[in-house]
Length: 190
Image (cartoon, rainbow, N blue to C red; front, side, top):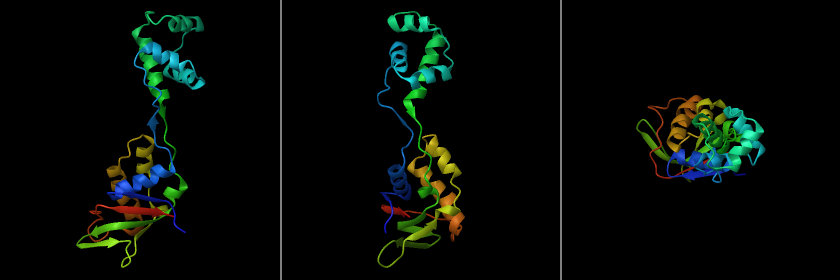
């Protein structure tokens, strides 16, 4: 039975496609786009999560002060308070990424596409050649997960870390390192 598959123009793009189909990446809520402190404060005070973000940012004012600020957009709020409101707004607008699921970190990978190690270059995953099989349980996923959770895991970073931290950990360096110079890849995980 076939498992989830990612496809892309590079190994990193195929891995990224596979991962994003399984879990939610870190992202900014599109509804949080207010620019000025008053609109940001109004939006924050509309939810429990917003009040928590204000508290976490260090905004500690009495309820009557908060009411004055909300009832008058021209109220003169000190710059330090405006900065705290902005910090809270930025923090609440970011949805954290889901952690990497077991399917990703403990899966058995089948990579189809052009694979090169040293002078040996071949297309894997065809009728004539089996896909490159990688045991994800042997990999070190820490660097990948750190970048993922920070929202900084690009396709290129994913490919680099996957080669160094998963492929090499499973089957070794290869003749002269691993390269994926093709223009089309699919990655299936089971």
